[in-house]
Length: 319
Image (cartoon, rainbow, N blue to C red; front, side, top):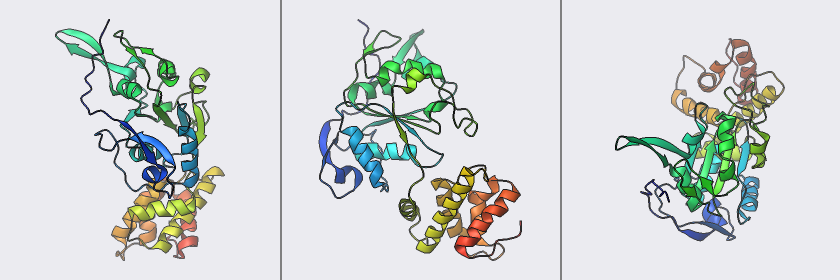
């Protein structure tokens, strides 16, 4: 029988019982299945600001003995992948991130062809080890994969024995946690906005529990910005979040080509902290344009400046 040819060069991850407080930082001793700390593939905790509703949804999902894979849809920069990574961090779970590349071949996702002693051999990758050991698997921007890649993942998504190209049979761990993040639902809607996304086979989509994720509530978004920019004035942060809400509404109504993300807001705050002393520009608008405004045409930018003017009470520059 063919032997598994990949070398598990990382330490063993042992399951253990954690609490909601351990994983999410919330005041609850409710038990959660996780891993002992210290595995080199476990992400680093960053003081992530958890939305309580998302925590409740995650606890509900993990309550199952063998949770179905998640397909999390949401706009760019709303925190889908970061949320999944920080779940892995909270659980101390070794975490593998598989990026949805458009040019990826179906078999390549599960392993690679290597040259060994003058011959080509197929060797499984860490994804297979994660599958067998119950680690966290994140398919980042999964709608970037071709539909053929989605089909090749069917047995993995079903947590069934998977026969690889070298004859090795990978057996799933019951607790393997799989999360796919995407800007679309995989059904084509939104593909006009998010280029290089694909329409997936309905049979592939049927294997996922479907979630929708939006930008955080104002309270959570303010806390996220504060975590990154501790010295930024609370009133400025609150105004930035209000501007973001107006821009997202404008996008939903077709008046702006794209929404402003949490990343954009953090970039705006960082630029503002650096340029705040300048007198040759209006720092609020200068920083906003570097973070977001210069990415749209001047007419749209002038309209967005009105949102900034409303919430910061600083007269907008002439565009």
